[in-house]
Amino acid sequence: MSDASAFKELRIKTSSVKRLVKDLSSYSAEIIKETNKLESMKAASADVHDVKHQENVLAEASMMIPDVKQRLESALGDLQLLMSDFEGDEFAEAEEVKIANETIDAASAAQAEA
Image (cartoon, rainbow, N blue to C red; front, top):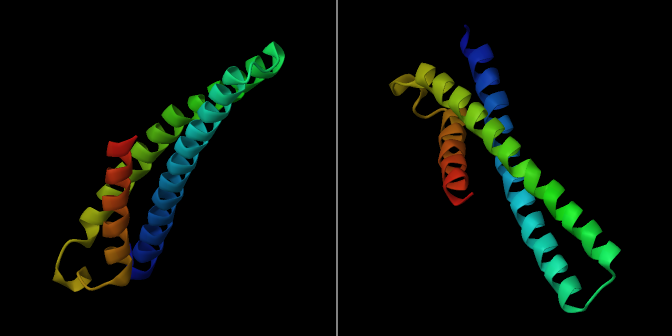
């Protein structure tokens, strides 16, 4: 694989991992928001049907977390495997490699939090 195509693949995989980290964060925030909304509805003695609907909204948001975690784990593994091709001094200063390493660190931290 030429350096140009290898760097292109690295950028693509890095972007995929970044997107999944962002998705995981977004879904986690949505769960918190929807949980708070549900609790306030229950505290305000809202209509039973409205509460049931809100419970369904929360359940749908909660179902997305395991899927995003699995996709993130897979994409992170692919990125780490690709990074093994970029070991060595000739790639150490490449911007793409630095960004990929930062993304791996961020994704690992996001997985630990979730």
